[in-house]
Image (cartoon, rainbow, N blue to C red; front, top):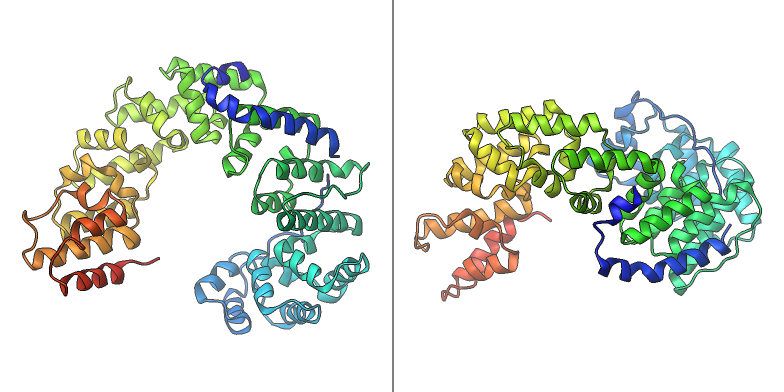
Length: 452
């Protein structure tokens, strides 16, 4: 596996990360992890309406946020959630911290405040945590209160404290206890922290049972490989690549690379695809061939499909039904099969867009703005743009200019309006007018249509 993938690696990337290899070796030589269960199974949706009302009334949540939370936890009376909120307030948590805790970990409402949560908070205080340290750390990673056992809670708490203190002081303190079998996760996460993995991702891994961060020798081996491959530890792709490399045997990945080669994908392109979307190596050979054959049914030639895979490796995971439904959506909107094939070649991500997304944007641009379908076929990346942030505000400006007879042609090219940055658009269609009253008017039209 490794030799095949590294075949496509750029020399500059190898040089960029060579120094990291030294850091990795030193880190693993120094560090020595933890595991535990969560608060229990997800609660059903019974009492969902009451839950929404309670979250809105008691914590000031928006209805949308409350409805989202109610899909993960629900209750029919306020006795238990009231007890949890009262306990947190007694321990000095601010309303902002409480809102953050419940948003991140709503199942805390299902815990027994006196029998489960209070003993854990008292234990953490007994370890010397100040009130401000306790509230900051627990509100940062509330799932700590869902763990069982003083030793596990203590170790997780220490880890979070180390990371927070390190971020404040720009250095890390190696003060965690050593010698336990449960230290693998902590040791591995500290190594990840040293290499630049963000606090948010570290804390997410800390409270998960991800196998690829609970190992020792296997983790170290996989970690070194991913670093050498050139992945940036500060990005989430680094962890995805680590999970993939950890979870697959070398012979298995060699077989997958071979499967792509048989379909016309060069080994160097497999590496580029892995850099874009590491998860694609998890697809089975059967799935790879199935997607290849389905794209042929959509009008793509065999020699064109490898470039589609390279541009958008995540499309390999699309089901046959989804791909065929996608073409039916485009055909139903008036595109020809040849035009769909062109769209898929230029912007293969369109295969994964929902029918509603494709219909809404196409109908708006074609029916309301009067751009011809052929322009969308030539510029399909428009389907990936936000209606609220880009398409609508810019089109509102164009409609205003057209109504005033200020455009030379009836309608400018679609790409001229939507492919540029906001700054370029404003310079091209708003700020270029001499009329001092018109420019503020157009700016207001643009701002009204834009939703951040």
